[in-house]
Amino acid sequence: VQLQASGGGLVQAGGSLRLSCAASGRTFNSYSMGWLRQAPGNEREFVAAISRGGGFSTHYADSVKGRFTISRDNAKSTVYLQMNSLKPEDTALYYCAASVIHRHIVEMSLTTDDYWGQGTQVTVSS
Image (cartoon, rainbow, N blue to C red; front, side, top):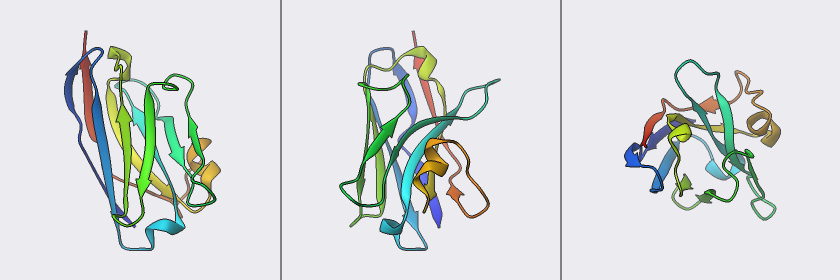
């Protein structure tokens, strides 16, 4: 699976951005999808995940609940992250990830059987 993230940029605090991640190579709807982020000097952290089926259950990090929304369009093989009420502490490189095991994304336990993209930079100014 190849993952291409886009949509990052510079935004003022309180603003919004929508990230997209286009997948190719394998059957998109076989994978749970998610977003991770890494700020300079920090470890990579979980942001949000959406399951591959069964009603597309979602999980969010506590720090983004109520502000970020993950969704997917299986027809377009794309996962989205709508980010509202952005804060300076949301500044990071955002990666999308794919796994057939949903908890690998939620628990940040990605293995060599999982996939992640190159990241898109989000910068929130105060």
